[in-house]
Image (tube, rainbow, N blue to C red; front, side, top):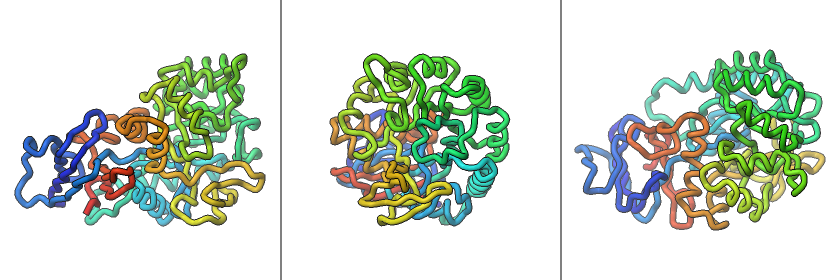
Length: 391
């Protein structure tokens, strides 16, 4: 495809701010970035004017179950195409496809299907669609606490097992990136050590762990927390629990669902106040209903109902969200987070957690050309995914 020069009033890389800048895109990657006087644009390059807009990296969502009426566990090309194209409209250009607790054979079939899809999209294509890239899989379960399972089916919850995880890794062709588990369960610590040795990010989630149990897991290699506050032992001044461990450890990154439903604004501010802006990551926990009207949808192998944009199961429990990361960005900015820091929480920080610094979540020479143009009120005005779009 021909080179594209994007002229923006403001660029947040997001490690620096460039005013009146230009981004040169060639072959799906960033070829140059700088002030308009600093970048040589080759003859014949296509021009895109982002006058009045702020251009930021595409959002990276490490916890998402579906969108556009489909769930990632359907694991076929039609469903995954629909999911990736839907979230791209809202500025998300990379996702980690997240499973929910299900029978082991169903999970393996889903992992195999997602892996096939990822491999099939690695080859360059003519006229590539505007779609997020699936970077790998996030196993949310089955090694979770029944007491903090949320809407995960109790009969499919498993004891921590390196054999079972090994089967998942084989089915996924090694593409599992994140494992969520409850560290207080028997066998959890050896499983954490096994997963870390296999290159996975181990996350604390759906857990009733006390503070010491959580600290033991962190010492064993756990470095991430899944939808902080939700499906966790509550914090108190005499029993700080897993939340206390997350708040006080700078090496642990903490997901937050900033949809105004899952977590109250002051609780988000407490999290940011304790951890700063460098270790909090915006996630959607989005389900099939994302980008869709209210109604009934599937989450894994069970049904949820969405009313006024809020998803619940038949027991009335929250069941994921319909959040998109552009809305999460607006939420935290409204809470007082500077825009550059909020952008980092949705871009470079999740990319770093995945080990993809320099490739995703950043506007830098050599990085994938995943870009979002934002209006002054932080609405998505244009999207580019690996060089496609923004026209």
